[in-house]
Amino acid sequence: MKRNGLRIFFIVAPIIGLLMLESPIILLANSIDPIIFGFPFLVAWVLFWWAFCTVIFLIAYKMNWGKQK
Amino acid sequence: MTTGVIIIALFMIVPLIIGFIASAKSKDSSDDYFIQGRGMGSVAAFFTVSATWWSAFAFLGSNASFYVEGPVYLTAFAWNILFGYLYFVVGKRIWFLGKKFNYVTPSDLLGDFYNNEKVRIIVGLIVIIFTIPYLQIQLTGGAYLIEVASGGVIPFWLAALLFYAVIITYVWVGGMRAVAWTDIIYGALLFFGLLFVGFYISRAVGGPIAMFNQMQASHPEYLTLPGPEGASGYSAWVSLCFITAIGALMGPQLWLRMYAVKNGKLFNLMPFLISFVAITYIGSVLVSWTGVLKMPGVENADQILPLMVMEYAPFVIGALILAGGASAAMSTANSQIHAVSAVMTKDFYQRYANPSASQSKLIQMGRYFLLIFSILAYFLALFAPGLLVTIGLIAFGGTAQLIVPTIGALFWKRSNAYGAITGLTASIIFIVLFTFIPGLVSPLGLDPAMWGLIINIVLFIVVSLSTAPRDQKVVDRFANALASFKYGE
Image (cartoon, rainbow over all chains, first blue to last red; front, side):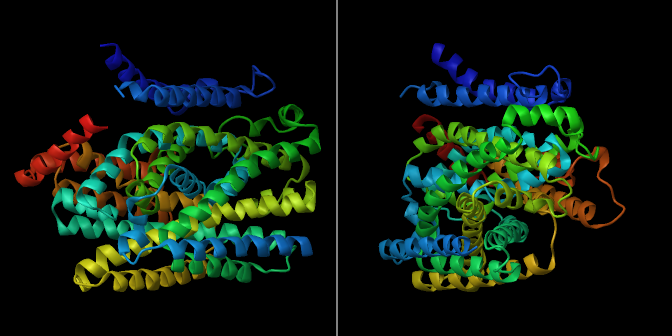
């Protein structure tokens, strides 16, 4: 059950990240302010969700995408 | 200038040496020439996929886009994620079926699954016709870089000719192995090159943070959609992401790399690696927006990177970076020429003209096709100019349509050839009409290929459901194969 939950998480989490970047939600982030660490907000938003998905992919690989090795 | 020519000469000679070393390792079989006998190791596979994926479209096109259109190219971070994700979900299954049923080309898999010659021919034609414009981009981009790095000593036509002469030679002698080995060097050069040069050049305005501050003060329209021209809004954002990621994944050069991989474990790691290398786009942001501040009004935006590098970086670093850019172009071009020649040889020559061709005859024909397509792309580069990103979208738009019958083959037993043919044909007709006929405007500002995908999906499902199912034996053969994939991964 725990493994199955992990499998689903690793499949669904990147989709959530992609939705944050490619659904109309991106229009809510389409502004310069607030500046985050010197980056305009749109750039910071993209970098945050990119980093989120990249880290998920790394953990997924380390955990064999939630499957038994 | 002399140093620049020397660096370019070295850049041309190294792949030739690698090509000849690779040819010494090759075996006299078409499988070895086209897909390295399905024995490609993980390091070579990662670099050749990444370097092939990273083309002039990314290296020069990204800078041109940020320079002219504002932030729309930031969607590239998402398309790297999508590409990596699809490489795992779709690519691994393609690799598995390729190994099980001995496929070499996209038509092999789709023609076999749909059990239909027309599907095979349509898929073959799509991958050939829509890969040529993408090949043209690489040639144009590589030639721009050589022209600028040589200080204009080598003119565009000669740069393009030199560029192709080198590629043809090492692909001719070394096949897929030479392509993969050269891509290891190219990959390392281009990933580190662009990021490094971005930080280096932004020092001209005080560094990255100072650059963003100055852009906010003087050019805020560059920092949000729809950009300074008001033409690159959400529709362009979403179109670029989906069409680029899917179109590249379905290109024959990437498809052959899925078959060539030795160990399926690589597919588990690729989403992370592909996603991670997107960090390189930060280099493009820094170069091009520093360019907006320091070098406004460049007429040919595709040249903004080489121009900025030559103006604001020491010449040796500049020439090395430009060699990295030419690497991006060459590493994609070599793979495309090789893949298109594989498709022509296996899908058309061997299947319809000479089914009993010997292995050496197949390799020989592959080399002839290599030459023919290279000449075609060369003349297109000389006589059909256009912005790299624009041409790239047309190419990706066509190959992206293959995702629909491919997903059908991997995940939907009820899909059939009628659905695949109708969907593909209608979507390609739509793309061609809305791309080339003046006055026809794609609805809602979406790229015609996005509408093509929607039309394709709807027709694929409706026609498949309303016509006879596929032969039960073929359905069972694939169902059993994919079931063993699930438990064997």
